[in-house]
Amino acid sequence: MSSKLPVVGEHASSLRSDGSRNYVHPADVHGRFTRLRYIFFAALIAIYVVLPFVKIGGHPAVFMDIVNRRFYLFGSVFNAQDFWLMFFLLSGVGLSLLIVTAIKGRLWCGYACPQTVFLEGVFRRVERWIEGPRAQRLRRNAAGVTFDKVWRKTLKHAIYIVLALLLSHVFISYFVSLPSVVDMVQRSPAEHPTAFTWVIVMSGILWFNFAWFREQLCLIICPYGRLQSAMTDRDTMVIGYDFNRGEPRGKASDPSNGDCIDCKRCVVVCPTGIDIRNGLQMECIGCAACVDACDEIMEKVGRDKGLVRYDSLNGLEGKAKHLGRPRLFFYGGIATLWLIGAAFAFAQSSQFETNVLRLEGAPFSVIDGQVRNAVRVHLINKTSERQTFVVTPETESGIEYIIPQTRIELDSLGSTYLPILAQLPAEQMKRGIKIRLSISMEGNEGRKGTRLVEAPFVGPGS
Ligand code: SF4
Ligand code: SF4
Image (cartoon, rainbow, N blue to C red; front, side):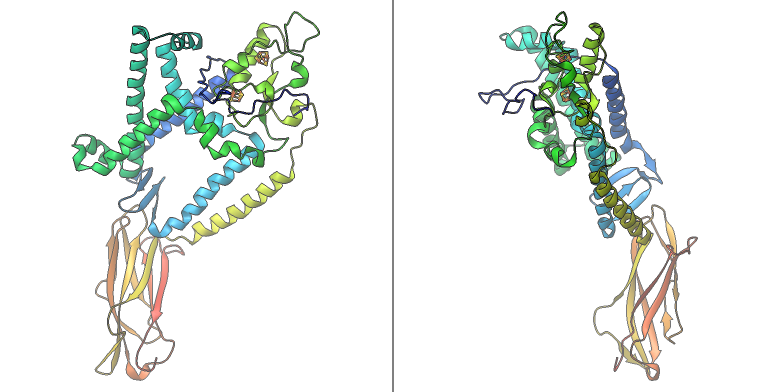
């Protein structure tokens, strides 16, 4: 930003210069971005609450089954062996966030981060409903203990605790399933102490965070805000104040002043308590409350909207904007590599796992001139439905197979061990000979539905 900008305070906006907490009580704000945010908040909260009820293929749409080490994701089922695929899922989310941040700044923080969604979309709304607008809240908080203050605070915290309990029950249902949560709440906590402890601890943390800690989570704990300077540049979209247009700030009646009438409306609506006129700051979560607030003021004084607006630092200073930047080409290159890697990894993952294991004990036996190897085939159905598998031996090597069951039915994520005896006349024994079995999933015998498993056939002299 311009070197003419005012000096920014050296302490976080949630602290006073003596180190005490500066409680932020943002004023109400109305406008197009606020409306848009509430639509996003409502949609995201609905998704969070409804998702545990949604079933795809007979399983929850999103369910991390901790007990059985399975992960259900929109009809796909992953087991412990597939855990490495999570790398692509998590790195994909991280990479998307990186690219969106480089182009559009802190959209995530302002519109989709759970902290913002629940604090601004739920908990502050409850506070506003019970304790009134900012001026009333400030007046009541500054006054001594009164009956009015006590009942309002008590009611607010009672509702906060109920909300925290509800949110933590929904959260836990993503890990133990919704029917289990419903069942557990009807029984004594002593019958499910682990889940009960999780819910109580999580509810306590949520209540503490949304009732008191609030914006400090973004300012002190969240690493994302601190990484902004590394992820963005002068062409990234931010929320900023048009210094050239606004300064010198002062009364609208004085024609020598800029467009900012110094009403401080943009400051009092800010949920992190900063003054956007001091330039881009780490504390700014990109909520656009100051944009709506200033637009409202500009409309009242008959000036153009957009004194505080979405723009890049270059745009705010009236300089040329650049769409293609080295940073974006670099991120684009990484994203392309990620797409290739993810496509390859998911193409390799099969609908079932199988391998041949040797039985414990002697690796082979020789009976009546026949060399015998006892093995077992381990088979896991990784699909979300019951499947039939067919075991077909490959006999070109001359090995004869005794298979007690060539068609095996397995439930979703079920597994079994199939014992198999392979035998070969001793005179045909030679080095490098292999037990080879083709395992296919009935009705899906294509490339992903058929696997060839093999193991060395051992005998005397091998
Ligand atoms: S709301 Fe607009 S006019 Fe009022 S102080 Fe902020 S920037 Fe200036
Ligand atoms: S400065 Fe504006 S956009 Fe940033 S957090 Fe405050 S109100 Fe939201």
